[in-house]
Image (cartoon, rainbow over all chains, first blue to last red; front, side):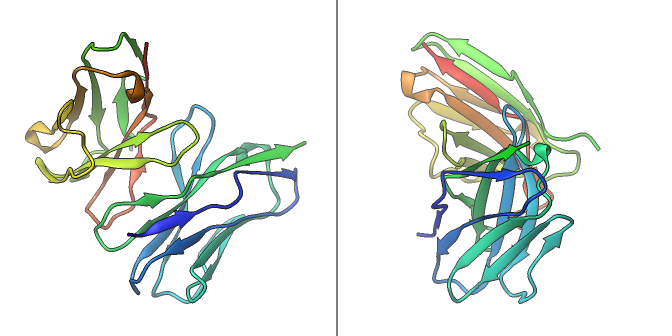
Length: 113
Length: 113
């Protein structure tokens, strides 16, 4: 079974600085999707960024970018120029084809002003 | 475009009582998901619908949980009877198809006393 591991339960960063959240996954498949979702306190989960495994180029969405290392099964999220509104739980997730999303345990990110 | 709507947002009940949660997906989204999110953890899939058909309900505790999606639009998730361990957030998500990005609702936080 596929598993997703986020080894950092909590992270903190100073406002305007850069932070990287780690994620590793286990799969024997070659074609799959990876996601980072953000869940602010008491608010709904929203998609931050998505990566298709067949694409070598790392996905980027404004201040958010990923470092996708397929051979190492690693999928880290980099947040540049951190803002107070970035404070949230961040979940890494894996999906193979039309199968279910498998989520990691989450990383709680705190932004220090 | 309106997002996924869920109600109620919060529910407190006594154990052994029944409870129901309602979800209205984004218009045009054929695929609907119900997830269970325990405190401090990532969501876990309970059931997935393709239109009105439940295509993956392997994680749904069928002795006390039931779900329906009449007419392939709105969906209801029911627990009867509720147990203390059912206290969690119940998330609904939808997508255009089974390989599309999933968009989440705000969730229903259930507390069983």
